[in-house]
Image (cartoon, rainbow, N blue to C red; front, side, top):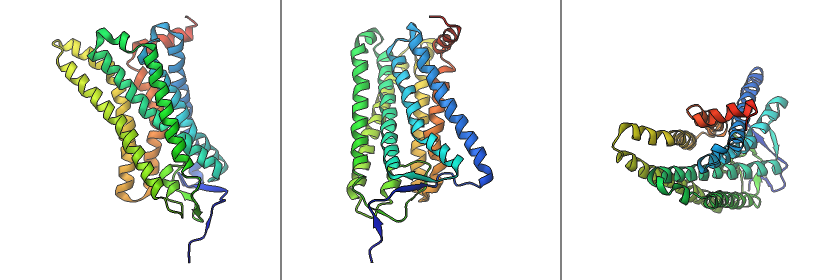
Length: 309
């Protein structure tokens, strides 16, 4: 007897953080505070780069784009999770799930591409300082952002559209607090071989390609820094890319940690807290990483709050 399925399902259930009812207010308060910190912190980075003419450089142009994407990235998952916690409901509509999945894939890809673009920017700044302004001209910067968006949109659109023809079984529980592509595909009763192949191919080509670009850029950066004779010069060169390197490490280590731990334990529920690391914690920490040791950002923020131009 074939398993019962229904292609016209109305909703999925997001199990997410299934905790005791008395802990729900604590969970709600924790994620609400983290979400507001993320939005406020990244918004301040954007306002600082816009308001201060000294920050109208490629590095801060890419940083402001990354901050915008981080706001959108965390807004894709956290608000719905907060609504579900507050209403003590786990349901998300079929259309809402597909939409959330689309934007999650989109902004995850954009995060990855922007970190790669920023690595290239640091590579040019350190390895070709005399030609930096010529190479990183406004046209190239805009083109890099445009290509990142186009590739992310096409990838997200392809993977989301491929989910639509799938028929789903009566078991519609997603062991996450958001609609994650891999989890949704594995709920389907129909053949998902093509979906799996496209998903893995995309992860290897786009995700792996982005990481390879970052590694290559930093291999050249390290070689250039080692060639600098003075210790002060080496320290100054390294400080210009330390924040970006920290953000890259946090982003990729948390993502790899999620999927490696899930594969090792074969338990999707165990990866839920880890998923919160790169979907909530990483976007929240990025503004602190880029501003705590950045004198230019601090100065711009002080001028912004004082009403100076």
